[in-house]
Length: 472
Image 1 (cartoon, rainbow, N blue to C red):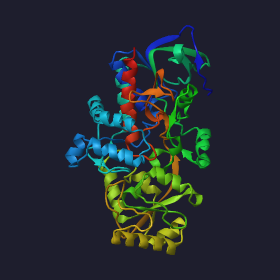
Image 2 (cartoon, rainbow, N blue to C red):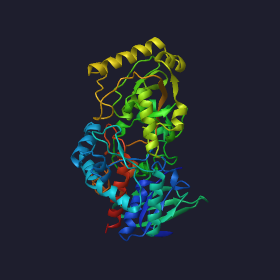
Image 3 (cartoon, rainbow, N blue to C red):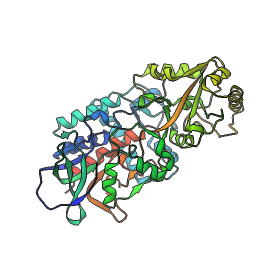
Image 4 (spheres, rainbow, N blue to C red):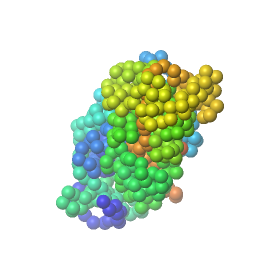
């Protein structure tokens, strides 16, 4: 699909106040807020259904701080701690003003979703980047359905198989509408009386852009929403929009080598497991972000890592999966268990997965010694995940392996925006153009705090929708 913006002064086939490009979590949240503000709103979604978005196919982990579930579980969290964790994981490369905007609206958004009917699991978990448990779990497809039904009930139009192929530009280089490509190949021009919101997702399925960022990315499998080809990003760039965080794009380390979707992922190393390469050697501090681990894995033999756990970790993760019907990567459900290779001893496990038994035994024994001594002399692992938990020994047979490769579920880089979600150039903003969700850059920086992508999409989607609707 060829993307091309154009200056336009002609007649219109349709007019709305707010035109939203993309019908995932960010786009639907924007539509709910825009219609609630009284704006005539239309969503143009390239795919055939709402469950093709990355929000809908995600693991359903949302990062929030200060919620009733955290309080019930006895945990303490705050905006300040959440902000510090986000900036720390991002290595201080993220835009502090954008992070602060998110922090100011995240708790309200949690209760907003709850009021709309989103059901949350009755516990929170710890995933990468967290100092305290703040991963709130829900069925992501049902959340998308709720947002979709709410937007439709409030009067939003939603068109599927409606790819936007360009932005329309008016006086003073303002965005005044979009070109929609019909199924027949004809073009429909839709005027946006107040604003256009780009919520078109990332670029995990744009191999050319990924290869330009890093040639190693050319062979990394994509598991994102199938429409995430970077269309919105390309439109904004053509208007001079600044981009952020491209140099920090990394794949995630979590997908089984025989897996193809987000259901085939496991993060067992964040629960105490270790990661070794084909030489039976550890190559990473297993508590860091799985994005950083994914990048490091591309440099290992055959770009593969083995997550190694013992029986006590196995049983804990099985209990966790049974506790929640939501598949979020940490638990072990029947699908993931079928991917595991089991050995009664470390040596037997090594033999089954094609590693040298003596080498794997030495690696595990060395790691267990580090746990006993309270210091990881090789990679400095001091926690289970982020700044939470303490490492455990792998000493309870049988033992298990989950053969893992990196994949692109999302890209976490894109258009620069301000606190009101205006799209920015080097000299100012582009009048009439807003952005939200994965198409936005600057929030994550050089790392990834688990659950922040989904919650950010909804938070920023709400802001973009309401600000566009209120634009004079």
